[in-house]
Amino acid sequence: MFSTDEIIQKIIKESNKSLDEINQLIDNEIKKVNGMIDKKTATFIVAKTIGIELPKTIETKLQIKNLVANIRGVNIVGKIFKISPINEFQKKNGKSGKVANVFISDGTGYTRIPLWNDHVKMIEEEVFSMGDTIQINNAMTKENIYGETELMIGKFGKIEKIENSENNIPSLENLNNTYISRPTGRIKIENIIPGKFEIKGTIVQIFRGKFIFGEDSDKGLVISSMVDDGTGNLRVVFFREIAEKISGMKPDDIINLSEQDRLDFVKKALLGKEFLISGNIKKNTFFDCLELIAEITNDVNPLNESKILENEIKSKLGVYNE
Image (cartoon, rainbow, N blue to C red):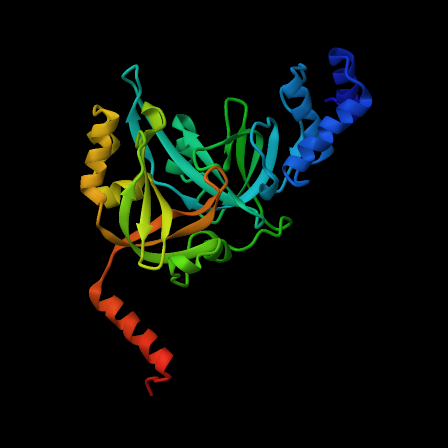
């Protein structure tokens, strides 16, 4: 395995760049992620960008919050706090396949691990389950459609169950409260800030798009919308099961339609409908605005809403139940 200095010397030799130039490129890579990768990782990225051939893996022991896309040889430890249902599909060659997603956290952040085909057996045979701490070795990182970094096991990657005694990872309950539990507070759109919240609003716009992402083996529905609650509007994105739930459709229902027909189909299904939407509000850097990635959706219950309104009025008037 090459050391950092050996990698730098190899870059200098094969690229004809000076040591100062290489160090500047390395510093730039570290700054891109606000110092969340070490010098060796940054050096590897620089070599890859320039086109220098290096060993296919490097040793990296990162916290999950420091994961960045397009790195090989990643070793990381985390606790399983969510396992998606197993999805079966037909490949283009007619054979069947399976996929499931495992979500892990080390307390610093979380990441998704898609498991395919033979790897799915580890879930089916309960090799590991919710609350288990696992170690992933020799994985690759990539950016998924949500703009998040996820781990790919690949042909040479390994997963094993380990004891958590020396890793100081939060309990399953704490991880659930952090990453899964229903947001504790509703917020008006005019007051939105980044974080986990619930909004109540009406879908007033559907943005044009393909509405389908992924390959045949992992096809999903995605709907980007604008939701208004009377105080303002917010971009809200629905993925996969949640998009299917609110629209009543699946990818195969619209896959053969033109882009315009798909748009009309989705508009007819959703425009003017009111929902309770819970999820993570964060900055969309591409559109330079806050958006909500929906995690839970429910129809509005008039009785519950009237009680909430009653309590709000009582609170403003200083009237409380004895």
